[in-house]
Length: 475
Image (tube, rainbow, N blue to C red; front, side, top):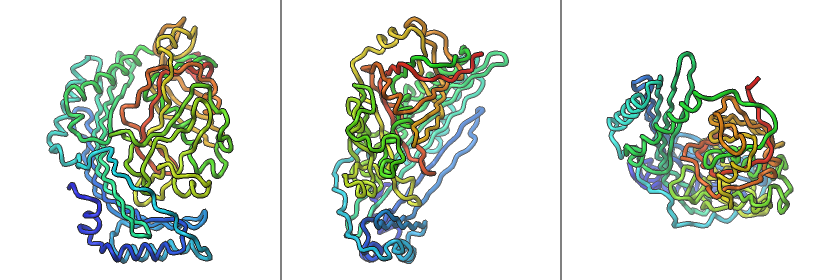
């Protein structure tokens, strides 16, 4: 089903365009801002485990969210019923926050003709049988690669979402968003010991890109390499030490430990460790961090955000100096700055709030091998699993899924059970060398905030942090 959002909502769903415009105008009369957010989505997922298809699902969802903003207050009503009656009821609900308030509706976001991804529905591009066959081939290939392979788990998922945003003045903008992802996990064993490795890729593209043998085989090979590496790992040491972070996916630490603290809502409420520091040094010289929602086909990219604002390349930290925050429309208005195209929501049932898109530390001038050679004793962290961060203090804990000891400038044994413990603002100031090998992650990130999950991207070059606490398991 490849249609425009306007066809989906005002033809297929049967909404009368003129009547809907009147409902929205009435609901937002006297508000400072607001919109009707319409959404129709299709999604599917497959899971292949223990040599057989364990699950296959397909889901269709539709609905709307009507928002009215009055000062700092927000009224929000949503429903899966795309009807005039439901929108009229929602209008009565959201008007409650406007009691005693007489606002002037903010100007609509600027328009854009830019398209960062095609509107084709990936779910329709490849037959069901071909998707299952792909998972079978991945399983067979992984098991044939090494006799130590004990389990292979593969997942494939895709979605196609159409969104429409209608404002009180009748302006309507739309976006069609494809998204796919593949992930492979391999468990290997020798005797009683078992270890795992995983790898995946994704983006706002079709399935065809992932079904080429050279593409999916590289995912299997990388997952197997990680698993076999971990099979040789030794308990990680603990203590303060230099840590070298690899390029690409380790940017997830930057995302969690630093990125959330640069979102506008936390800074407006002065609950972020970066609050009130605009124009001040918050990182070592050479550290430049951006959030860029305009990179073609990336998982975290959006042509427009979920308020209709075109995404952009926002400089957050420039050469160590704090230059900007990530803003949705509400927080930007209250902080008297411009929106940055970072108003995002999980779906129609959720209100938008400032969220990251693709958060990246730009590259520097150091050769990655020279960075390693300069460390006498420390740790090299290549891949990360889960982590936690406290926005107010910036303190974080992150587990490493692939790490190595560094001895006299060379990589030593792989390490197991290592965690990085620190505070984002402190770690930024301890960046001692920045590699020239900036890379983006393979397209697998999902960010959680206030119960909402959205797809995101990260990226960074090789980094040397001259001192950070490592929690280990060695005794």
